[in-house]
Image (cartoon, rainbow, N blue to C red; front, side):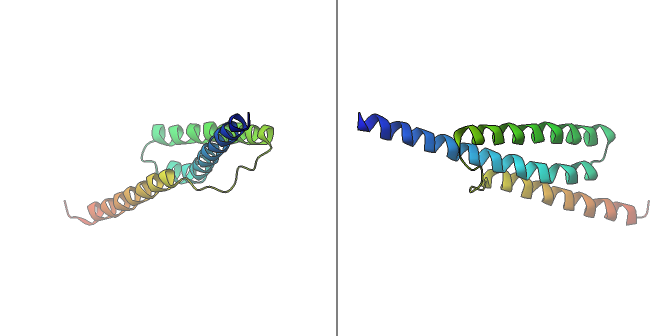
Length: 108
């Protein structure tokens, strides 16, 4: 009987660990999406980022309710996957700005 308890405890730990990763990823997006919307090159893209932001905020709230039900803290883990994706998007935005400025300076 003790092994079943340990097994279930390990599953709960794995579950909460993955939820913490997801919670951090969603919060990173909440911070990044407004910047992406501001940098959008079209109205449709800006609106898509803004809609995604609202959905992501709902995901964060849902995860907070799950953590409350589990009596666990959502803090304590960094999602390195999302961090890498957002770092890549920042590089693309900087490259796009640089290229746009260079094109404006090029004689036609």
